[in-house]
Image 1: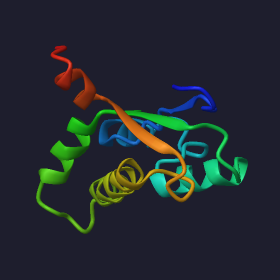
Image 2 (image 1 turned 60 degrees about the horizontal axis):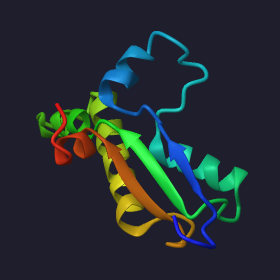
Image 3 (image 1 turned 30 degrees about the horizontal axis):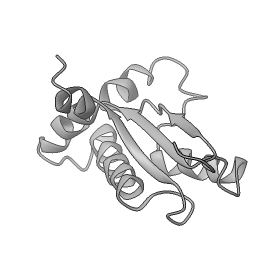
Length: 117
């Protein structure tokens, strides 16, 4: 970050399919698994950008593996995974707070790009 930057925020939403299925049994009354709802909550808490960069941490490979499965209109996890992937792609591509805040992806893709196992 350079001079004048406000710092960064880390968003680790845990919206991957394995986490959604696991949390169907645990904490389901409190867990938010819809990425749009999570983003909306951030905007509600911070109407103005509190940071210059948001680092979003998630396992893209797990979400992409689920997305490759045959679409099943009765599988709520598959449907929500598709929605969440689109919501994440939107903020990574276009930023948050109307593009004022850059969103940087970390997680499985970052590990793969840095040569980690």
